[in-house]
Amino acid sequence: MFEIKGLSVNYGGIEAVRDISLSVPEGAIVTLIGANGAGKSTTLRTIAGLVKPRAGKIEFMGEDITGKDPAYIVGKGITLVPEGRRIFPDLTVLENLKIGAYLRQDSIEEDIEWVYSLFPRLRERSWQYGGTLSGGEQQMLAVGRALMSKPKLMMMDEPSLGLAPLVVKDIFSIIEKINKEGVTILLIEQNANMALKIADIGYVMETGQITLSGKGSDLISDEGVRKAYLGG
Amino acid sequence: MADFFHQNLSYFLSGISVGGQYALIAIGYTMVYGILRLINFAHGDVFMCAGLMMVYLSSSLPFTISIPLVLILTVAIGFVIERVAYKPLRSAPRMSVMISAIGVSYLLQNAALYFTGGLAKVYPEIPVLSRSIVIWDATTRVVTLVTPFLTIILVVLLSMLIKHTKVGMAMCAVSRDFETSQLMGIRINRVISMTFMLGSLLAAVASLLYFTNYASVTPTSGSMPGLKAFVAAVFGGIGSIPGAVIGAFIIGICENIIKGGASIFGIPGSGWTTFSDAFTFAFLIVVLIVKPTGLFGEKSVDKV
Ligand SMILES: Nc1ncnc2c1ncn2[C@@H]1O[C@H](COP(=O)(O)OP(=O)(O)O)[C@@H](O)[C@H]1O
Ligand SMILES: [Mg+2]
Image (cartoon, rainbow over all chains, first blue to last red; front, side, top):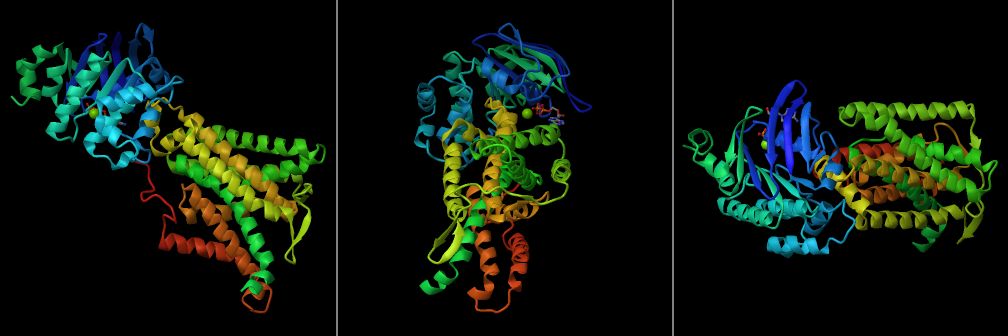
C-alpha cells in the first residue's frame, strides 16, 4: 500500500536520512523505533511533504507522491500527528477537529461523532480552548484532528512523549482500535516496548539508516534490540 | 457639559471620522503582522496608490465604475506586492523581509512621483460623500458621518469572515503555526495572499474616505496616515484586530482634541495643531515603554 525506496534527506549539509527503504502493508501497524536523532521524525516529515527529499521514491497506492506538497498528500489520505501534538491553542476543541477536515467538501458531522466516541473526554471539552487541555487530552485531540481528514494511513510521531504511563496505555489501546476500524498506522516511538507489542512490523533506525526489521514480536525478543532499546 | 460638547462638536466629529479611517488602514498592518510577523511598511503607500488611481480613473470614468475599479486594482497591488517582494523570502530571516518592505514602500512612492511629476493631484468630489452638511451648528461633510458607521460595518463583516468561515479559521491557524497548518491541508500561500488582499481592500476604502476630506493626493500622502495607523495597531496590540480598531479611534479622537486645544481647554493660540502629530509619536513611545504588547496584544510576540 505504502512504500519508500532509497529515501535520503539532507538538512543543509547534514544527512539526516540515508538511503532507507520500508513498506507498510494495508491495515497493518508498522513501527519505526530508534534513539533520539536517528532520523525518525525527518522520515515522517518527508512523507508528509514538509521536507523535500534529496533522493528516493515515496509511493502510495501505486502513485508516486515524492516531493508533492502537504495539501496534496493529505488529500490522498496520508496524515501526520506531529511530534509535540501541535494543537491550535486559541481554537476550541471542536474548531481543532473541524480544521482537521479542512480539505473535505462532504459532511463531517458523522466523523466528529466518531472522534467523540473514541475520546469521550473531548466531547465534554468541546467548547474549551485547545491550549487549556492537559497533555493527554491534547494528544487525543491531535489524533482526533488527524482522523478528521479521513486518512487511509495515519503517521504518528511519538504520541507517548511526556505522558503518564496510564495515559500512554490509553493512547495505545486507542491506536489499536483505530487500526481495527481500517486505518493503517505508521508509528514512531522511543517507547519501543509498547510500540513493538502492538506492531505487526517493526523497523529499527540508527543514525539515518534502517539497521533491522522484522515482525514486531520477533524484534521484541531480539537480543540486540533488547539491549539497545528495551533496557536489557 | 452639553454646551461644551456643542461648541467643540466639529473636533469630536472629525476625530471619530479620522479614527475610522486609521482603523481601516490599521487592520491591514495588524493582520499581516499576525500572519507573517512582518510590519508591512508599504501598506501606507498602497493606500496612497489607491488615492492616486482614483484621481486618474475618475477623470475619464463615472464613479460607478471608477470606485469598484480602484478597489479591485488596490487588491491586485496588495496581492502582487506579497507575491513578488515577500513570498520569495518566506524562509529568509525576518530582517530581510522588513528591508524588502521598506524597498517596496520607496518603489511605490517613486512610481507615484514619476506619474504625478511631484504635483499634488486634486481628489475628485465624490457625490454625496463630499456634500457639506450642518449638524447642531457644526459644518462638516457627509463623509465625516459615514466613516465611523462604514468602519464598524466592515469590521463586523471581517470578524464574521474570520470567525465563521473556513478561510477565517485557516487564517487563525496559519498565524499560529505554519507547519501544522500545512499538515491540515491548508495552502498557506493562499491564506497569506488572502490576508494581503483583505488589508488592501480596507485600505482602498479608507482612501476614498480620507482623501475626500483632504482633497489632494501627493506621493507621500500615505506616510502620515500609514504611520498613525501603525501606531494605532501597536497601541491596540499588534496582531489584534479589535485592538487596532479601538487604538485607531482613540488616536483619531485625541489628535483632534489637541487640534481643538485652543477652544477646548480655553488656552489661547492656534499653534496646538502642530503638536497633534508629535502627540501621536510621543504616545507610541509611552505605550512601548509602559505596555509593549499593547491593549490586546499576545503575551508572547514570537511564533510558537
Ligand atoms: N530542521 C532541522 N535542521 C537541521 N537539522 C535537523 C533539523 N531537524 C532535525 N535535524 C537533524 O536531523 C537528525 C535527525 O533528526 P530527527 O529526524 O528529528 O530524529 P528523531 O526524530 O529520530 O529523533 C538529527 O541529527 C537532527 O539534529
Ligand atoms: Mg523525533
